[in-house]
Image 1: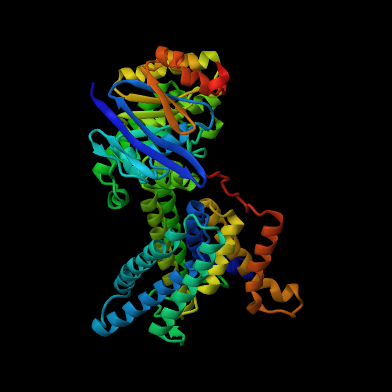
Image 2: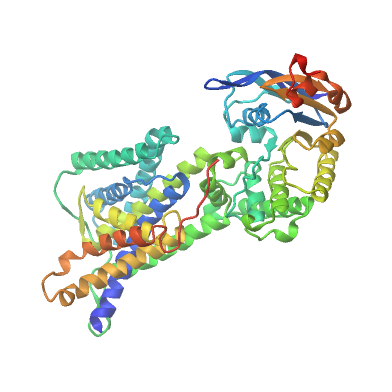
Length: 257
Length: 310
């Protein structure tokens, strides 16, 4: 197995709250890796540190063999990590198509000179970006809403659009923060198919999710966070049996069993 | 009737200039939520730099054609203003990106004083005659209505620039990045947009528009001065608020509307007040409008996009 992402002793503190303590984990190329844990365990904080939204207080990420710059979100996207958000964060006033095209920004080069002169390179690049954006919308199944302003999309379609926008950055690692939140069973089923397709197409997936069925059905391996520490990491079936995990979820201490 | 047409025409001219300046305010506000009160002074630097260039060219190559001279003057003034816009953002505003809103606002006022003072040191306190290189000989398309070539140029050039800006923002890669950043710059950066570069670019474009507006303003009135940016800056800010600050179309609409109201107001104020006030009170209209808009429709004519921040 080739490791894609390696987190080494990641720590993050907010004032008096130690949100992450010495979190180390390794994600292999091509797998679906779950990150679970009770509310407030630090899962989203981990995503935020990974993607550069926060600067970690300690530790480092090694991605594809070299260290990630910390606190430079667009550079991290450039290296091949993209994400979605727990509470949808689309560019609401932009159309679905424009959202996806904005996601492709980092892979395009047209400078101001090219844009002002509209030279052949710029026009060709813009055409390819548009084409690729349509392709991404088709991929997640919302091509017919390309021209719709994204705030007018249904909730489920907004979630799909977020995934399309993230995929447009051409990531090697796609980090999904509770993609199934607020979805009904049918939508969750479609989402599962989509994630499987994404993995099949060569993108490694990291998944924060509360839907246990989805996590157990999708993930190759699962890490469990509790109060900012990693308390377990294993295949789903083993994690389900892990005593520390059961205690964390059921709120028990030593005397709980 | 002639007065009406004449004042509408005058209003369009000054309104175009207001619109160009207002675009700079509104773009920066849209993307950062900052009201850059130094924007009017960038206009002043543009006008005075152009003036300096023209004076130099007149001494250096006296026979040069006016259009070439004006083009060169603009070609110098625009980059100078772009540099100022870039430097302001880089040195002052960027450090205050996450500060409470009042801090960058006060800094902007400080920048305004700084630019004025530096300009006063360089160009002195006197009013300078601005060479009117485009003819100011009035033509009479309709009996009793006068229009000068410089006024027609102002309207034409402004219209072209505004169309160009709309295309830039709505149809290009960088424009898309600007709109994404305006909605939510944290998310934009997490999606791979270099938001620092986009914000710097926004300042630079706004400053370039201010440079053009400054040259137009000075050409129209034939005068340049270190404090000349204050009033048009304030008026353009009013125009931006009137149209709905943060909204490009709003800035254009607001600028033209304000120009028209002001011009018509100045034309009829004597009748309206039975001779008590004359046209030198024309400035009150802009501020009456500002007051009314802020009281009755704070989001302006076209409304601001309401966007939440990550």
